[in-house]
Length: 242
Ligand SMILES: Nc1ncnc2c1ncn2[C@@H]1O[C@H](COP(=O)(O)OP(=O)(O)O)[C@@H](O)[C@H]1O
Ligand SMILES: [Mg+2]
View 1 (spheres, protein in one colour):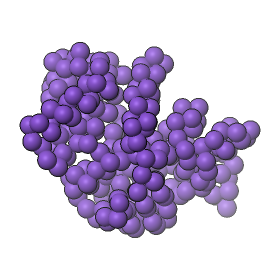
View 2: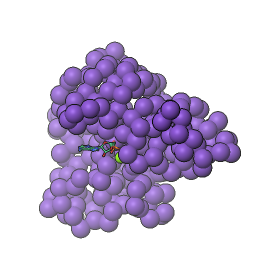
View 3: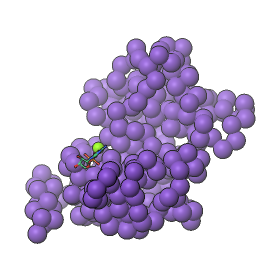
View 4: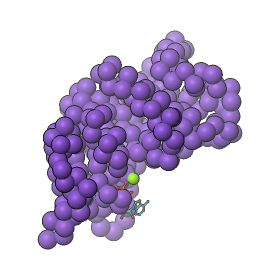
């Protein structure tokens, strides 16, 4: 279980996120929703240990990680697929994936081979392109590499920051199918997504972030049935301003 209590943080002066309480049960998938600039990526940066200023408690299966180094956090199994993919363009697909194994706790040759098998089976297109330079891939294929790289370290919790952003519908389907297979396999996931029609069917519960605070926590199915969804962010933002 991933449990956040009163998490705050920012980049210099002042807090961008504040008083965040959040729980993800083992095997659960949650959505982190909210308008642009709400602090979704900042929260993931706090979880990954790369936010300059952070406070509160972040526990993964009982282990406190709020002040841990980003390396230790990955080794503990809390792994992010960052916004914008961040490929090493001159390196091959396979070498990009191999970089993900730095977080693998026992990176023996057989453990690494097992992870490659796992990732190539989940995302067969990466197997086809294993020797191609990452910089020559399409956006969707690069996103697959980013997901695959995160999986190389055998995460317990996967944090995904808008993985479908700017991608064509066909490749969105392909990536969504892979994520659904991971979910069916019991992987715990946090999906940051702005599009409710993608996020809600995929998740069990949703947290809506407005101006750096949790404005709403609701079952995804309940949230999906609301008829004021279009108005919701606006209404929550208006309440938060008072
Ligand atoms: N590297 C950064 N340095 C300073 N401020 C930042 C940085 N990244 C984001 N911010 C600010 O933090 C706030 C939240 O941004 P972000 O977490 O990226 O929102 P979201 O992911 O929900 O769109 C915004 O006001 C943004 O300008
Ligand atoms: Mg963001």
